[in-house]
Length: 249
Image (cartoon, rainbow, N blue to C red):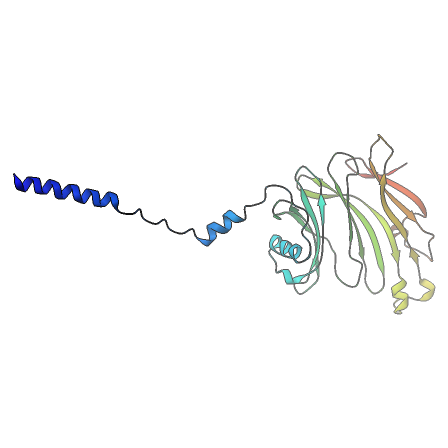
């Protein structure tokens, strides 16, 4: 009987020791889980990054190194899905131009195409975003210069969103000249030509569509200009009806 009582007492003491033992210390959180908690993925559209942050964003989206980005611009595009319209020149051995759309929430690549741009001393393409037809989605206007050896042609390309892609819906000549070619003796003085113009986006008639118009005012021409590359002399306006770019009153 004494032996049984001793066993019961020993078992009870052992159970009490287990209850009194301190709880195990939880494992420390890893650095990666802390970083994930501290930097959640953005869920709302962000403004265009600038400076080195823009180059880093482009590099990640295009799977290239940031140090080969020579020129870049970013414009916010209003659409059902907020986007950044990015125009970039890279130099992976040869200069290459890219026009791309990135998701404004996280910089993910949505669309890209070769712009034909090159960095050969020509002016960088100028980008304008404007809702031309008043449907709540911006169009993209890209005024780009091409040429070589002192010859230069500038053309305005108008792009509209078709889903998540940019589609060209019209183009207009802005200027053409061989002034540089004459200066470096690639063209004769007597063959010099030049046509210039000013380009603006203006308001359309109140209460009517298109809500925005493209205004091009062509200056007086010099020499025998290539007609297809030169805007008409005087003021012209153009509107986008949701399908094509057309002359407007």
